[in-house]
Length: 430
Image (cartoon, rainbow, N blue to C red; front, side, top):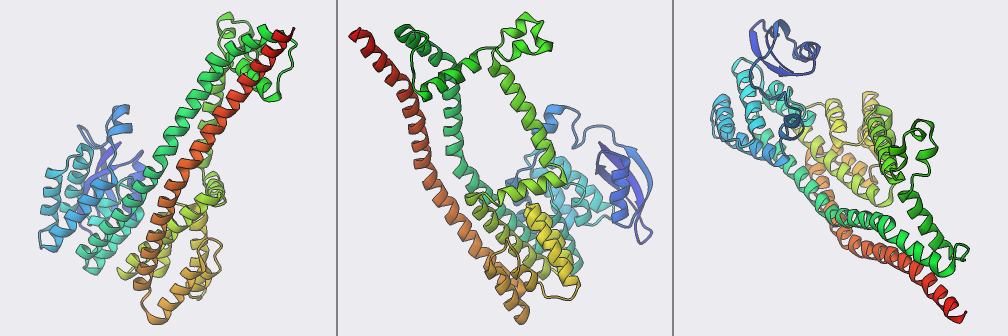
């Protein structure tokens, strides 16, 4: 829902603008964080960034990293050239191709024109401008280096987009192969194995002795194609039509419901922490996640501290930007140690996630007063490490998938051809 509002800021000036949220309380809370008090709040009418159509909400209200990267880079260039901020935003609004992003930029422009800071205007759209982005812009505004900060934000967005692209590229091949394998497996189980089972029964009779792996395939096929489980359940036993539906249909529904509740659980604070902890224990994923986290921590923390953000605030923002609750908890614990008077390098050196080199480099930075410079070098190093791991992963996945597919095909062939050949010999000898 979109609201229009009028409020008084810290200086007593009247400001107005629009806000996207679920309830008015969300708007009041956002204004309170800015030190503003609402005077009037109304539900906005007409077209806006929030579409009533469910299809539009799911598919059209998205801004890609590329769109955000281009927007940030161009805004930085225009601000550096001395173009007024509102004029820069108007220009970017006119040339934006994404309709939803165009409407968002229009609302941001109105907010800035009414006296809202750029960082606060960005903060109203957390799905587009994350916490790191907003805090860096606010730091740039307060320090008078907005153009420089926007360049750093754009560079960081490019890094994130590049990493995501490489990970997606590495996972495309195994995802396609795995999908084809699953479809082929169920196709064989449903359409081919039942016919082969009939052939085996005709050749050897119902009491024919078959290898254990052949019996396993036949049992799986029978389970998927029959309705033996459903017809015994009281709610369905009275409905003949339902009794004729194979177990596969209900198995899909069951696993779909299971997946739904699993996703709901891992979105809760406790579930998300447990899921992220599990991911950090998976051998290959642990390496990738750790290296990405170190790179993101180093680059984000360096950018924030160089922009004048305090160490405690930078740790809080950086923890939320890493995307892993376990690592975020470690940074929160590190912030507590910093509050107690310890240097940041000490808790980072004792971390179970961060490699020892990060703590050592931080210690050097603290001694020389060049934490941001050193951390940028750490980030560059781990960016290269991430690229190396992803490239090597791509080269390893292909032969592994070939071995897996070959094993499945070989197992099915052995389960089918072996008994047929054996039973045929028995029939001919008789």
